[in-house]
Image (cartoon, rainbow, N blue to C red; front, side, top):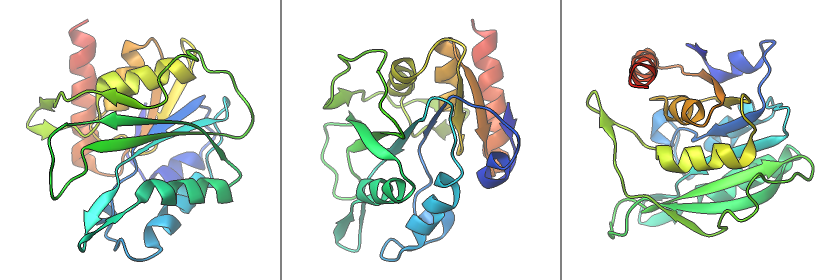
Length: 209
């Protein structure tokens, strides 16, 4: 199920989910400047409400080039989670492209946090880089996350039939990967256009099985 609403409203509902995996919106998407504390305040507003039964949360975030410098968003994510009593348990990097760009980073940090020690399903999952240069375009929308990478993370942090929650469902990559991995999905999406696109994409994926 996907709620067409702010994730804060969803998290205040009486819902149960086992694992959280998401890629939070960038500075421009929520109308804040990278040289302020506004993005961290935004993170805190919903991170403080997370309560997965597995005590696991994975955040996928890309550092940002702007103003002639690099803003280390992954450091900001770690700081916010630590302030909310989560500790960084595992790190990976998704290499999106091997091509150099003056404007965009070619990688994404994959940060998994926990509130207590846990055992990974696949302890041999590499700690360094996962390469996937595929770019999926469906219905004219270019998806920001790799299904291959998301599915690998879900399989590593959950069991079959677990519920994976994505507070920023976007185009539905988390939902598709969860279904392909034999898990269930739950999400929030505040943008109605993306919400409808996500539903259409999920229905199409189920039809093709």
